Length: 468
Image 1 (cartoon, rainbow, N blue to C red):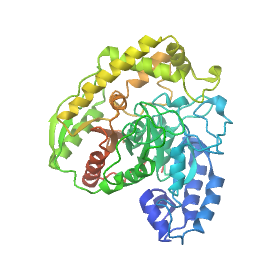
Image 2: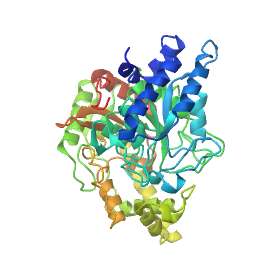
Image 3: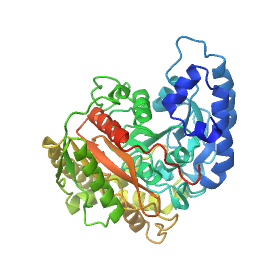
Image 4: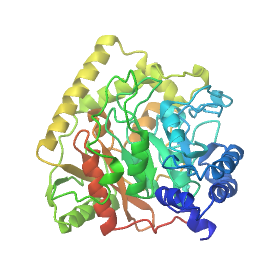
């Protein structure tokens, strides 16, 4: 197996190869470390590589392979998003003033990843606070898409997706507050899961109503196995999803049954959508029909315009309480503008916004009384050219303009439903086209079973970007 083949071996398979001593932990980690050293200066996938530490850990892990109690991913490398605090390792949250910030403890998600036996290769690039759907934090460098390095990886888990697509890690951890796993998965040709609200803890920090940590992977099996590692309640969580009937990894290969599927290929909110993305969703619908499912064209209820404004209000007010909060003068213009706007919102207006969002979310969830899943495009177009979305003179317009790329993803953060993006297609330029599937509340199991069925019928694992 050459280095490129090893770099694109699935995380689950790597774990098995390591356990059977068919490949060494040292060899695996060094393969990724060499690729990071060669490609990251141009791609900007990692803000903080931790290659010396990873190489040291690989040597220690190699000596423990005869243990009977090895965790499931012993010696397998992984990337961690730079919005997640890591003990002793720089964590910038994409903010220039946090260039030298080093937390004293791991977040629970990071601790779970380490307990599963993973070795961290570094912290991946993210927009400041994870606010936007493109990844070029001021004071650092842009994350470049391995399919076309003039284009963005998306965001906010842009570095995570870029690293995985370029073969700079076998699997990535990300988070999704408005599409931040699904968007970069779609733009980089990967599979990503946004879990249900409360599926994954945010301990010891504040539990977000919108955001959930989750996996980005090449395969459904890898993503499901990492979700098993991440999932679960922690003491003090404000809300949590009911535990699954069995491990998510066990859903891979299980028959999904005949599902009633809604297909909605047209964009909501009067936004434009590239024909390749519309066609991708329709082709996915045809594939699902050929697999025996009942597919019906049906659009979910649209958000009223006032609810779109309410979402901006709640996002802005939440930005005011970001923790940890860097000095205001260090923030990029879009976050300054959001915070300044958020500070003008009084408590009654914020309460009204929250109530109307919840009311609209109930209407959206009721759509699934008649359907098991919903199929849509993941995003509305190809990866934008880096910098093309910037508008420093009007940062709120910049925020809204960038959001026009992603009209399909945020509603499911407000409802808390699980959703995935599958890398089913490519456009005429060879750029990835993702398809989103949304599930019923707390029903990741159906999404994983269905995604695995689709992956078997229309496999994508053999596709590699030019930077590979």
